[in-house]
Amino acid sequence: MGAAGAGVGVEKWVRILGDFIEGEAVEKAIRRVMEGEEAEEMRNRAKELGEMAKKAVAENGSSYSDVDALIKELKSLAF
Image 1 (cartoon, rainbow, N blue to C red):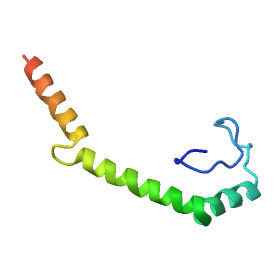
Image 2 (image 1 turned 90 degrees about the vertical axis):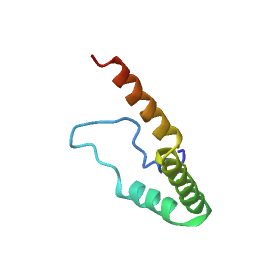
Image 3 (image 1 turned 135 degrees about the vertical axis):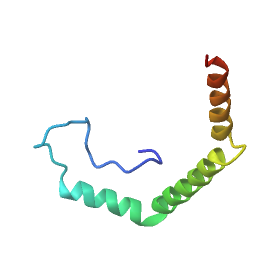
Image 4 (image 1 turned 90 degrees about the horizontal axis):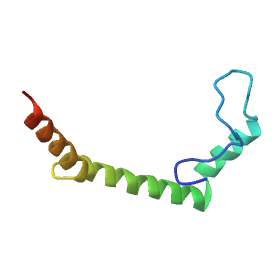
């Protein structure tokens, strides 16, 4: 699985109760996220992405600039 999480063996999304994840699969996924080199890589990537997100929403960041441009465009269209 990618940097977004650790798989626990579920192959499809279900919205009904009754489909349970085996406790061993959950334990294995938690250990994978909490221990070892892969866990360290996940934490480093999450930290990196967090820093990128903060920069994007800061003044003059890409998201900030995009929202600012959208607001200006919407104001120009207002009657």
